[in-house]
Length: 376
Image 1 (cartoon, rainbow, N blue to C red):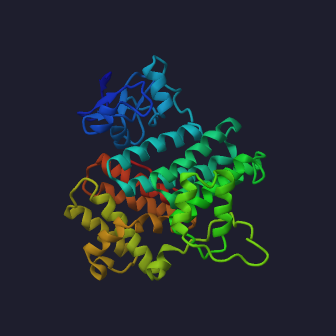
Image 2 (image 1 turned 30 degrees about the vertical axis):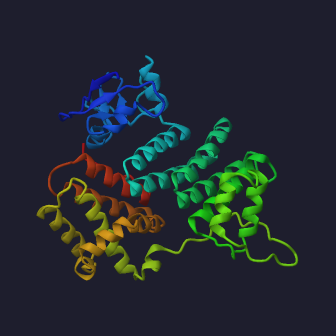
Image 3 (image 1 turned 120 degrees about the vertical axis):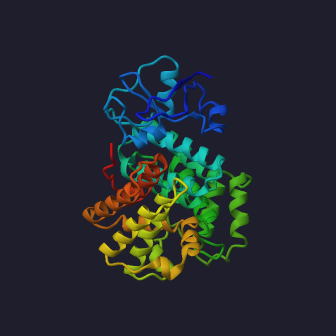
């Protein structure tokens, strides 16, 4: 394969894999510590891997702003094309396409939580930028939505289809069209497979009917949903009601866990600290002190002592940090901005900007809907 050295500010041992193959070179994908399949190329000619770019705060070594290129852009460069113009904004499709490649990579590496977080980001991007998507990209976005079933990311699929349906309807592809019917069927399938509804739920019959109509009774997804739902409750005399296209309102994570407001925030801050500080494999004393200071400054209770480290790590593994972050995404922007600044404080506590910690900070900040100022 064609490779070039990474040109990060600090020495990086990884080689940039410049591949014309959709999905990236398989050898590079299988050896992420040796080859970088995600990278950028600056107008100055420097190639920078995703890790070094994150450590440099989204800038090339020459100082120009840069971002990881989409697969389409990487292939164009591999075929001899120029790099994108500095500061050029990626269209929605390119960003979602990149996230899809990341989801594939995370699932391939067994990182289910990271894949779930990336899939949730794709749904968030669609909800915020979907209305401006070009008409020609709608079939591609619909096809992307179908991948959530193959990935097994059903809850995130509900969010994605829930954001795509109104976009399709606004473009004349509503419930009466083939595109709309298929979208409704996939939304229903994701809801059923995520466990949002059962065979006794009012929406069970409409979902099965939508799948039968759009995909066919013999389709594998239709059969899978029917098996998941089990026996359906008998229809009322007036027949099945129309399917409720709005996903059920989620119960806030703090409510599900039985946290009061103060405890929930204390748990979020502690889980965020653990996620960031442990990203490089070591939590040193300076990082722990930064957590203590943050808790004292916010006058929050010591949930570390209350729950214990094993229980807190269990919360992390079950996605509590993402769930709480999503819940807090409705807070005023000024409050979320302060929360983002605290994430950076945790990262900088040991005086070392580790690329893995940068990724963790960006991930959590993305859930909150803020962009913290990173060093570099």
